[in-house]
Image (cartoon, rainbow, N blue to C red; front, side, top):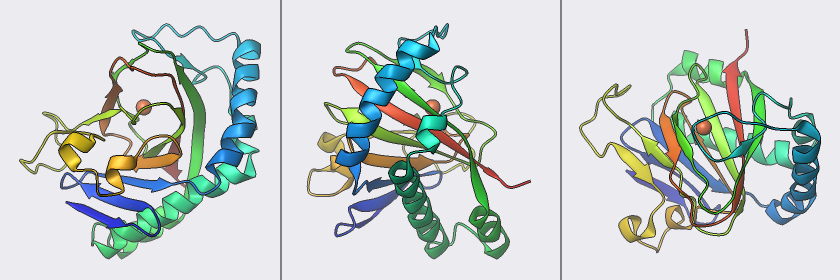
Length: 214
Ligand SMILES: [Fe+2]
């Protein structure tokens, strides 16, 4: 089920749950301009050597993401998306009062960047144990090609489609969901598996995890 607000350029897709929330970042150009060069600089300084079975430069394990956390526009964009996502989940009765309260006091615990060249990819993984994670498509010369997989260990058995990607050929192109790409934030439950197939275009994303406050 897709539920959208075209004026706000955001929406939510239920598999049925788990969900994928998406929204356009209003200050995207400003954020991109500042972060793009900072990421290039950070790649040089961090001496990143990822030994994962995939082709991506990722600052996960190499950098604490301080320069990302210090970017006020980026943080505002992420929390704005987060709050809108929670309000969809509450409206649609996926969060009862006590869970809604817990989601109200969430904190961001990790933030890192991923840089892909043409042909780059990332193997299937999840962000267990975090209840919520997100991706900001900072630079993406094509559509967002991440695929979310909702396979044999269904957290919420539903019998519906078991994977999702932002593909206008399937979703139609008269809605917000088919525009998700550069400048959009996507939020999803951390345990939901996802991967990046060999990408046909360059892309840089920022990923983050949220955790309940202890
Ligand atoms: Fe991920």
